[in-house]
Image (cartoon, rainbow, N blue to C red; front, side, top):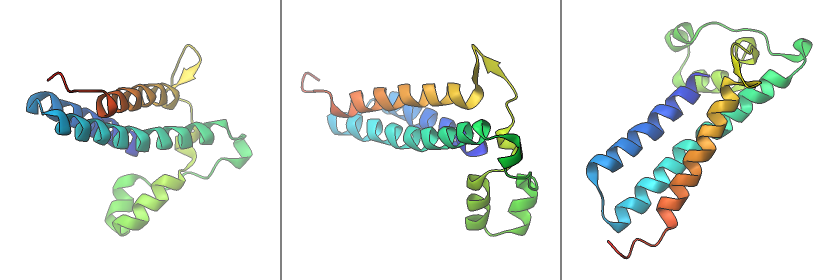
Length: 128
């Protein structure tokens, strides 16, 4: 859940940097690929959360301690591993729109960003 937010922020910051920088042809490709990278990671994380939400209740991982506690007690590598494995709170569907939960909508958004990033990275920019 938390890392999806980080991926959204990263993709957004990369897009803002690209807009402010107004790069030449190579820069457009680099920024496009960076957006693709951040969005692909976000897509994988959203897919993982959708998987957790699809599990039957008896198969949902048990809830663990909060992120603040994990950061205080464990090394960063272990915290990342624990968060990626997920816990019961990530399997809870809190909100839906048109029957799709938040990670479903973020996945749709990430797919859109991947598409736009690939378009930017591989389009012919020779007319600039």
